[in-house]
Length: 514
Image (cartoon, rainbow, N blue to C red; front, side):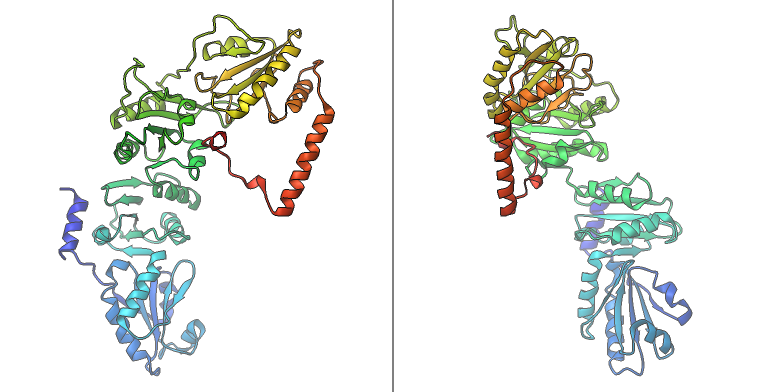
């Protein structure tokens, strides 16, 4: 039986009880030092104040239940330190305050031990709880699903100060605890998944930025389903991302999530994991290199070395026989990812069969002819990267044919079409939407020029004229002028209506292609 489970059982049956904190009786010369022992609950009272005796009694009784809060408790008898108390809290006593690293909280309730207890309990939802031993922290396990634990010899080092600063930052109720003891064997910070009996260790630099980023990473779920709200996280991640594709009608989402979580634990948050329901996002399946014939299936998407920082490659986990169902057990996925991380996983680019002959003016390019047609030719190659389900691509196709027909006598220029769902281009070229139009200039194939205005065929024509020297191609400037005027009127109307399209979210899941 594991140690966490034993502690939970022991706490449930009352075998372990958190010890109440020791009340510090503050002398004037030590007051400022005590205020640094965050989190601190301190009572200022006086024998000359009518309400002080009742508050002191309620406070000392409440302290007996403060063990799980990990707070320092102190009292100041202002009868002996009148000037200091007047400077600190004023003349009206008693005053009960909770001090944090940043700011404080004043108690406004009655002299009631239960009410004081509830106030401290509520106040500690945003504070760092300090304990002397690991066992005292573990007594909290039955009440929480997860928590941060830091181990430090004292409060003086940069390690504790960094941890305390992160713990004091605004957050969503995450519990931060610290064990401060000169006998701590090693300074460290851990994030404990109590129900999962799993610990993640901080391995970064001791500064606020790095630890805050780590905090965000470990608080995120190991695995979640992709949605339009979180798609940006995975599609733009600079870390490798493992995509599990399932048939939502046939596959058990929770089972796959459990299997994915087992694999995710092996990579210390250096690899992200997400589940995609093929029925909802079927356009994404082939785009990321999977055949969409067997589910569940897995592919790894990772950054690819390129001049473009957004370049990525996909590494599907597929059997040698395409008729067989892929194995996506935690062991198989872990081995697949480790092979990538070790640099031993080969990049396999998909390709349709090479066309026996070209039937149109627009050259059909497949994965196996990408290099010879686009990269090796000493020509200007204008490529339309498309998907069969893309409505804009279908609309552009006949107009693309017209341009190819018009330029057929210019031997310097080739117009090509590339289906991204069945073929893979070299990953250094970023295809982030459909259609994507790239012009590969002669002798400058490493720096293709992207045509952003595919929605206007006249602007596409102008783009070619501007980027291919001495190109003879008809461009209707009046049509472009009319388009620009319509766009200006629309923008003016939207501004008047308060519509700001610059803030529209990018469609990572191709919802705009329905």
